[in-house]
Length: 366
Image 1 (cartoon, rainbow, N blue to C red):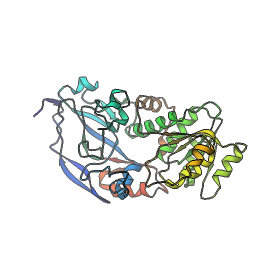
Image 2 (cartoon, helix red, strand yellow):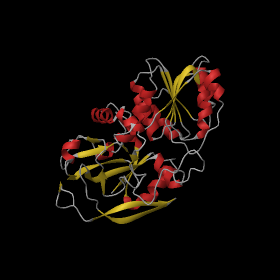
Image 3 (cartoon, one colour):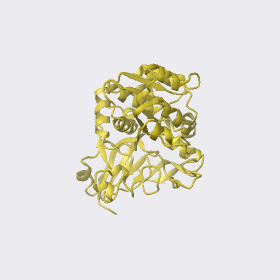
Image 4 (cartoon, helix red, strand yellow):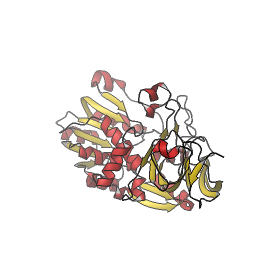
């Protein structure tokens, strides 16, 4: 057994939620893992259910159904990549490697890069070609369990004790939102449209507000989320079910369109109307993991408007800022957290996120 340090009260077994397949999630007993060299054993406190977890739950991440994307989930495994907990044991050299001690509150980025490929060597670790993502591959199981392992290549951060556990579980989604907003290069006075106001979209609205846009417009199909978007800083909100949002955005911009649009719905049908809302030489940022492909007229992008089309993937270099903003109250995400449930209620939690009329962020608490 590898040398490690840890508390003596670590049990031999733990409760863990196991994804076996489409809508086949079972609460089981697993051995508590032992951290190897450079690894950390974390006692999980909270783990969020993400939209990508819902795609896995419903089967989209298991069977994409097209030739371009392979399934990115390998059941059976423990899901969950939005987590926080405390260091329970340290593998040999892990404390020095990650700068943590026993009992520290910690989070880790959702990606575990190889640190050796071309992208990692150039600092683009979030695009690593050999990366693992917590909760989707067997090699790096997630946080919907009482304990989990942070591998040696994890990007680990300490969390201030003054921050609540449930807020700490939102560090990862807020980090993703900050990266998407940074990709948009919003300038003072810009007209910004946020498409989608779920957990990530609302975090984006809060971050966009900090950029001091001239007008911040939020769109969503659920009116209660639009109420929150206004609370988070949106100036104007529209529900596409009730309003011709393209025409409304054009009216508000003298017919030109918005400067920056960030898409965070996960709905392929949102893409083309989004393109029509953007001004010529404007910027489109795509964040979502889509449920399927989208057919759009690419002439809009090129000959029509000469748009800048940007992707946003994960949360590179944003965790320290996310922690800082939450700690200082620059961004308050309390209204986003609608449910905190035990692992035993996992099915209710997944269905609440899958049908989000009243729920936004659901946390599972092992």
